Image (cartoon, rainbow, N blue to C red; front, side, top):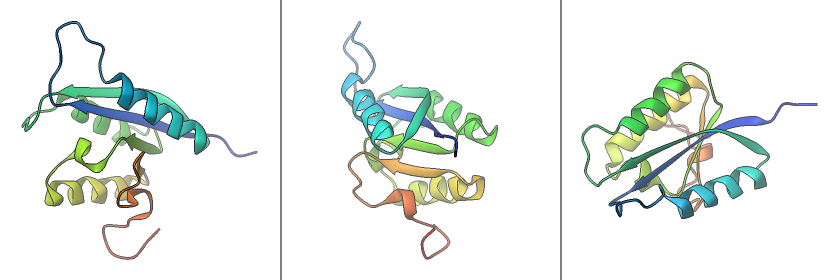
Length: 121
């Protein structure tokens, strides 16, 4: 029997109402996606703000991926990770080098099978 794929969830909100919980809709959608795909969520990282240069949640997520704590990243859509195509490409390239798959709930560009070096996995 194969082990469940371990996933980290990343959410980002453009703004936060004072006292509001962090991204419940995004988080719930990502958890549902993980269940549907046979993954287990082992961590959740969140950032607030748009156009942030330093995103502590995203930095922590990548540190944990580099430490081998998960096999996949799940986020609502690619824009949660980056709105810059170049930055997104770099993230995908690093994920591929770590053997990590990147999944979006919306599945808008099929990140889970994209190999940034060309072709598909």
